[in-house]
Image (cartoon, rainbow, N blue to C red; front, side, top):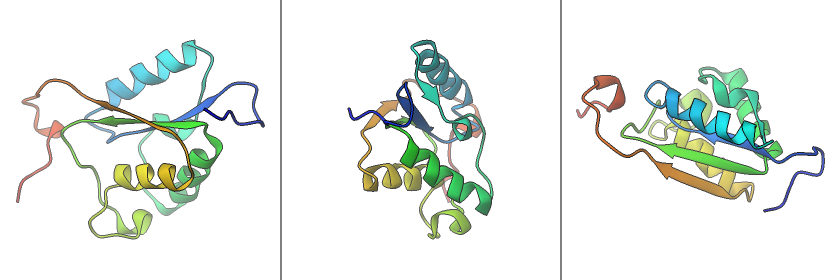
Length: 123
């Protein structure tokens, strides 16, 4: 892994759907932070508007790698952020990471949930 020369510690961008994987995001962030990695601030709150678009892109570019957490939801689709009517923000973040040449480490949440917030609606 190539480490960002502008920081003394590796940094990471955490990507996932937010509402359903908030605990997992926090656990990953805590584990990485306890090992001396820098967690980008945007990785700990949901994204929702155009001003976030630039911050996300910059956060990914400044990170040494991306951690992708995948659950049962595809995630929010916001054309104003992703430029697509069908691409989720999480999918878009993944594609930016790949386009920037960042290593992406993907984790899949194990187990099923009966909580409706953890599943996309099937139409």
